[in-house]
Length: 379
Image (tube, rainbow, N blue to C red; front, side, top):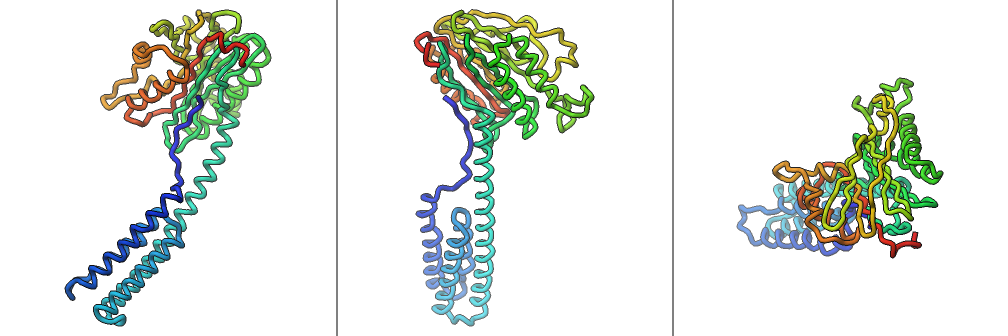
């Protein structure tokens, strides 16, 4: 399960075809009523609504055609009621023609803007495929599901991140959250993902892996040479990345966890939800040198057959409802029947969005990992 929620900015062409009947019917109705109305009543100015409506869903040529039909209808009305050279109708015809041209120009500009947006979306999708690669549904004895909910409807990628790699002895995972938004956050997320994928294959232990990630982040956040400046974002605020790095061996029913200031993963077992809290979490990536950290401590937790570990970013637990209450993640998970990772994340996404009123205040990423020996050998 790999999901991106976003808004398609393109208006489907098949929907615009029946919609063209609306302005055409409007032209006919207004013209007929205008010809039947008393001499002192003039409905011709209402014909401008036809090309204006058309411009909202059709291209410039269709809009211009509807505008021409409206001008022709106005001419017929003028000929029936008075004459084409009547000052009142002549002014209406000229005004309608000019407005139709302007509306057609607007339709052209809108069409160009949509084309640019489609191009930008294709670039974003390509970047997404490179930066945030889908996690396989199976890796060794593990079943896995992942989902990314973007706070912005048009966004495909952001400052949240996750990745998984297969090693000779098990599977490794990272989930993180960059402080900040926009292109700067995406760039910093790419640093962590690239460093993790490179180092995780080298069979280094977790402390050395986290140190490698720290070096990549700290070295990539700035180039002033001043460590204090290297952690500053473009807006002058401190820049860092919270992260959790996990090692799940194939042959041992455990999880090795190194936590760098990230919300603790949750372990689901037998209807109970237990946070995997580490006694001495490391500082977020990018802040270790400033915090004077003495090293990364790895803690081990039982991860037995049928257990599910849920990794998540703070966009989940900081989602608020209309009253301002945070999303009660652990309580909701404990109230649901056990299931597979895909079902869990599907239910979690629906419930989270319902709690937040359909729109999140921050990006949210989730990865569900279940130990299931029936999946062994598939990864």
